[in-house]
Length: 604
Ligand SMILES: Cc1cc2nc3c(=O)[nH]c(=O)nc-3n(C[C@H](O)[C@H](O)[C@H](O)COP(=O)(O)OP(=O)(O)OC[C@H]3O[C@@H](n4cnc5c(N)ncnc54)[C@H](O)[C@@H]3O)c2cc1C
Ligand SMILES: *[C@@H]1O[C@H](CO)[C@@H](O)[C@H](O)[C@H]1NC(C)=O
Ligand SMILES: *[C@@H]1O[C@H](CO)[C@@H](O)[C@H](O)[C@H]1NC(C)=O
Ligand SMILES: *[C@@H]1O[C@H](CO)[C@@H](O)[C@H](O)[C@H]1NC(C)=O
Ligand SMILES: *[C@@H]1O[C@H](CO)[C@@H](O)[C@H](O)[C@H]1NC(C)=O
Ligand SMILES: *[C@@H]1O[C@H](CO)[C@@H](O)[C@H](O)[C@H]1NC(C)=O
Ligand SMILES: *[C@@H]1O[C@H](CO)[C@@H](O)[C@H](O)[C@H]1NC(C)=O
Ligand SMILES: *[C@@H]1O[C@H](CO)[C@@H](O)[C@H](O)[C@H]1NC(C)=O
Ligand SMILES: *[C@@H]1O[C@H](CO)[C@@H](O)[C@H](O)[C@H]1NC(C)=O
Ligand SMILES: *[C@@H]1O[C@H](CO)[C@@H](O)[C@H](O)[C@H]1NC(C)=O
Ligand SMILES: *[C@@H]1O[C@H](CO)[C@@H](O)[C@H](O)[C@H]1NC(C)=O
Ligand SMILES: *[C@@H]1O[C@H](CO)[C@@H](O)[C@H](O)[C@H]1NC(C)=O
Image 1: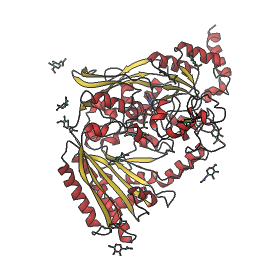
Image 2 (image 1 turned 180 degrees about the vertical axis):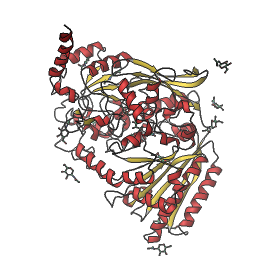
Image 3 (image 1 turned 90 degrees about the horizontal axis):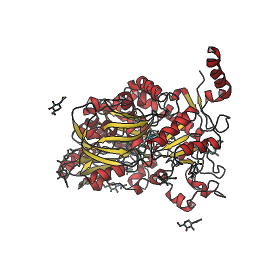
């Protein structure tokens, strides 16, 4: 009796799902649920299950998936992030869906690709209730089906999509409620918070709290969502003052893949709470609600800065421009300690024509854009004057063309007010590499060394096009002074970083096979750029939301010393390993092949 009871289930497991033990199931497997099974799931979740129907289907003969949208409109809307956010399946950067169904003329389109479900998820839960998510994930994880989570679909590396997956779409969790005196779990105090459904984007939260004369730490772009930005760290206008978005969380509600609904805060499920605050989106469960700290509205926003480029094609101009960039970059930590944020962006070759030039200048060109809160324009002008004068003296008055912008002031709302039309870089290919840089890397090294690193970091695969290198002034005192109990699992290097610095430069073949094009791009970064970061900043790391997920050192880059602890938490809350994302914790045990669509365990 004893044997019959234990061996029988074991045998059936081995025979019925042998293949699926190695891979998440796909429609080609006998273990894939029948349409009746899916219908039963649909019934159990109140009919909110959608069969994936790519919106651009109407751009193909016969509109194979019955898209309700006019193709002309789709083509016009394709660059807008807000458009992709509005559709259950669409994401900003479709190379990560294997370009499965994109409108004619879009980046990556070619005549032969056609329109298929391909790299898109198979089914999508248009959830409006916790039970929709818990029931659907329990069902899918028991059947060895991959689960992905989409909020807005902004992810720069395809982490909100996946072939043959069941997708949980959080878009309709849109509640927002401000509480002036919310009791902090486990602490004898209250704070002013906003309780937000994870389907909100920053624009909707900024708008709601601004009506109550408050603000929050979120992203710069209003169309970005809470889910991915917070869980991967999150920088924005206020991060250099108050810390990252993940440093502002008092509580989350999380649905796990085995169907539990957990409230996590510093008094309960605190391991999960720690992981959610910076340890990666789409990995531990589905967050449905965040409780976020709010702040007073800044009195004003002051902007100022200048740009420079080599005045002519003499070598003096080129050399002076690199020296000038080194001078500016090495000043960043002190300027940030003085209250500035913003960004410094350097461009080479034809990409430097972004400054409005008619031909590529020698050396490097840069735009220095500072932002200050609660500041006078006079104060900003004085800072910019001083720095611009140092740059001018490096240019001996004539090697560099410098154009200074007089400081201007505006109210905070006009600065943060969401403008979805400005978020229009979707539909492109996305693959970047980045590094967090601290005082050691920016100010404490000889400027000659700094100059060499800057030149190396600005290498581009196509030597004529050049590339860009952006220093986001998003760290500094804000992240450094966040109290310990507010810090989750965000990469510790953020506490000493001043800038989140990213660059492009790989020439990615947009019309090639997506898996091959991405691999070629990643291989180039691995040889040309990652070594520069590792030499320049060996002990820092990279911002997970805007980094290179294919870096060979991704564990150190994105998680640092938190990796093993996060892996244990991942195993505890997602024991079926239903949630996979590139460079997620434990993702090295799996191989996601965009070509076959299969997600399989790596054979050891
Ligand atoms: C135009 C643009 C501007 C940007 N500006 C900024 C900026 O100012 N600051 C900044 O820090 N970053 C910025 N980013 C990067 C941005 O933070 C990431 O793209 C981020 O992943 C977006 O999160 P999302 O939820 O909107 O996107 P999604 O693609 O929906 O999700 C991103 C990841 O989080 C997971 N996820 C989303 N919601 C949940 C949830 N509720 N529960 C569990 N997992 C979830 C997804 O599975 C995926 O892995 C920008 C990106 C773009 C495209
Ligand atoms: C789920 O049920 C609803 C309502 O009955 C229906 O409209 C929808 O098409 C169903 N979804 C799937 C995938 O069959
Ligand atoms: C699509 O919409 C545009 C206007 O938005 C219209 O001119 C065009 O005829 C429409 N095309 C189809 C196929 O309906
Ligand atoms: C991905 O695209 C390639 C062509 O580039 C195709 O051969 C492959 O079948 C596609 N895979 C999926 C899962 O769509
Ligand atoms: C998703 O659900 C919401 C809320 O019920 C509904 O308004 C919306 O039409 C649904 N979206 C799709 C694509 O079915
Ligand atoms: C809680 O704080 C209040 C004042 O802030 C204090 O009077 C009270 O003793 C504290 N209670 C505990 C249990 O610490
Ligand atoms: C908003 O809050 C600030 C301080 O937090 C206060 O000075 C100001 O008067 C408030 N404005 C309104 C309209 O309530
Ligand atoms: C700006 O000033 C307001 C009003 O005095 C204050 O409440 C707020 O904390 C200040 N913000 C910053 C970032 O210094
Ligand atoms: C850089 O700063 C400028 C303003 O100076 C702003 O318009 C732009 O959005 C910023 N870019 C990024 C990527 O932060
Ligand atoms: C570039 O500028 C320097 C300094 O003004 C000048 O001496 C030189 O002749 C210029 N070269 C060219 C090619 O215009
Ligand atoms: C650079 O500035 C000088 C004067 O300062 C001007 O004569 C020259 O036309 C400028 N060069 C360009 C390319 O704008
Ligand atoms: C991009 O890939 C396509 C398809 O493989 C190929 O025909 C084309 O030559 C490639 N382009 C470049 C620039 O490599």
